[in-house]
Structures are given as C-alpha cells and as structure tokens.
Length: 143
Image (cartoon, rainbow, N blue to C red; front, side, top):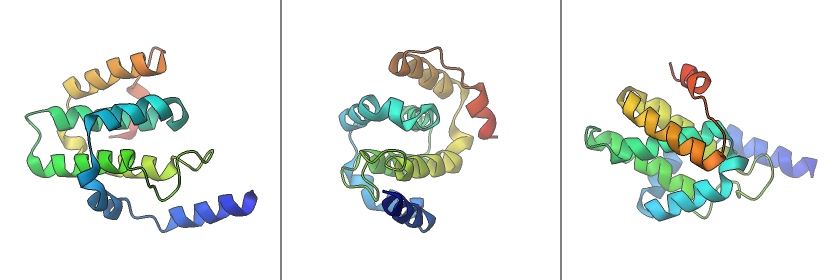
C-alpha cells in the first residue's frame, strides 16, 4: 500500500493543473458538477468544495469575462472528468489532483470573485456539508 501511495505522490510532483484544465474543457455539465460535489463533497474537504462552488458561481456571473470563464469551465470539467490522473475512490490521494486543479483555477481568477459569489458559495456549502460553514479562514488564504 505504501508503494502505491508513493507512486501517486510522485505523479503529483509532476502534475500540471493548467495542462489538465485545457484537456478537459469539453466534458463539463452542471448536472455532472452537482453529482460530483454531492458524491465526494465530504471526502474532498471544505476548501475544495468551497473553491469549486466559487468557480461554479463565478462561471454563472454575467460580469465575468469570457477568458476567465474558459479557465473556470476547464477546471470544473477536470473535476467531473471520469478519468483522473488519480482515481477519486483511492483514499487520501484520490481527490488530490482535483483539488490541485480547482485551487490553481481559483488563484488565477480570484480578482473576479466578488462578495455575491462568495455568499452564494457559502450558502450552498451549508446545505451540502450540513454545518454552519465559516469561509473567513479559507478566504484569508486567497489574499
């Protein structure tokens, strides 16, 4: 088991989120996004889910430039793409590639994410995780 984990860690070292974003843009749909978030949300962790929701709501905003939306849709496409670098069902590391792509996209488009988008993501987080989600700690990492 340790060798497999080491192999996956080695894969992650050379992982290029931007390349994977570009490869998967044509695979996105809202339904697949919500299926993935509901199925793996708790396992993925609150930061990854929150960042995914930020991207989702940013993509829906008419104020976001098309070039930014392409980055977002590419990242969300990778999230829902059925064939990942590391399969999602593998404990601990299975969602690491998804989290890397989502985080890279958020940091690329953060200047376009406003309080309205953050509030929508926060409300949805509370529904998905069933807890009172406080985004302040996570938002501080975005600055």
